[in-house]
Length: 451
Image 1 (cartoon, rainbow, N blue to C red):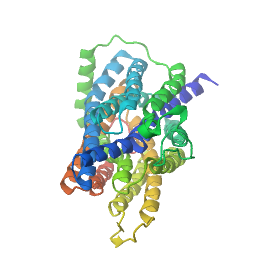
Image 2 (cartoon, rainbow, N blue to C red):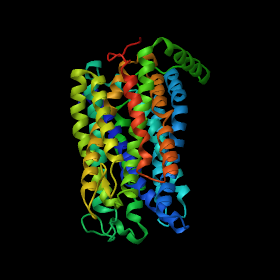
Image 3 (cartoon, rainbow, N blue to C red):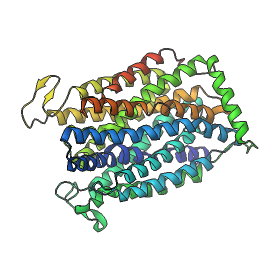
Image 4 (cartoon, rainbow, N blue to C red):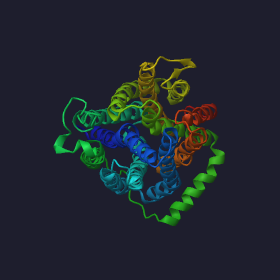
């Protein structure tokens, strides 16, 4: 394998290694597990079921909001420091340690709800580490391929990452996560003698994610190296450069509109990822294994659609691909909002109807597929707006755009959930965020550039 091919594949492997932080921890296993045990805990304190569900979703939403705000505020500063020093790999390594340690600690999130705060803290550390590291990895896209290939490479990276998340989810469901019977999806006791009564198979998602990450980041650190000269930068120079970059945004209208647009639509997408699993638990009363199968469907479509989207990106450019993905996701949100266990689109359903389950599986496939397409094409469009001298700073601002208001979707979901006491209606703000992002995208130059 040539050095350039190794570099590209090493870069792909970071997607493969880090995807379980989204697939396993946030969306399909730990997030629903937390929602379930938190709701049961609040029920035990005397709250009604709807109020307990709302309290559980509010705790989860505020945690995602806090992590998003912290990442958003710090990302541009870290990016500026990395650009002035000429080094990105040490930053990726440092935040990778946080990924590993935070995920390990999730094991101690007990099913009786006695240490809910501990579980949220460990998740926050792990997820913040993954988000920070990914900013630096994203900024390496222009250095691993030509501009003509960025769409294909970005799409392939997300496809490869989702494939990793899919395999990780398969392993967890088949060998570890307990159903109500105490057996895994294929009727086995949880592997390694884990105690099903203590939900140790489900809690193993934390150590599993940490070990997976540690193993599969090895190709990245072996094959991807910093390419530029080491510079004698310092924090003062970095902050001065960042401030100059921020002031220049008033002259770079396309970039500014894109950062603001992506701020809204990526926040909405993260809201879908963060609350899809908890919606299934709190609204449809699904077990973790059902949510896992739902995750497999979503991840499988994400693999296929990310690959296809990358090809469409290279042929037509990222902007029309982003527009189409947002329109589909708006439609998905409207469908989910109109559905409960008792009704669909205003029509009452027979007791025990499986229609909500079937519809939500289709929605999961579309969320996974369009989410992968949206993220890959967004990374390409951002890369088109960068130059070699400020690529990490700009991807830091891109991280800020994706995270400065990352508290907004969880916060709005938390507020609406608390007011309505409905986990279903709580996700309604996502539609508004997608629409705002789509409107602002009109003013973005599809070719990028410095204007």
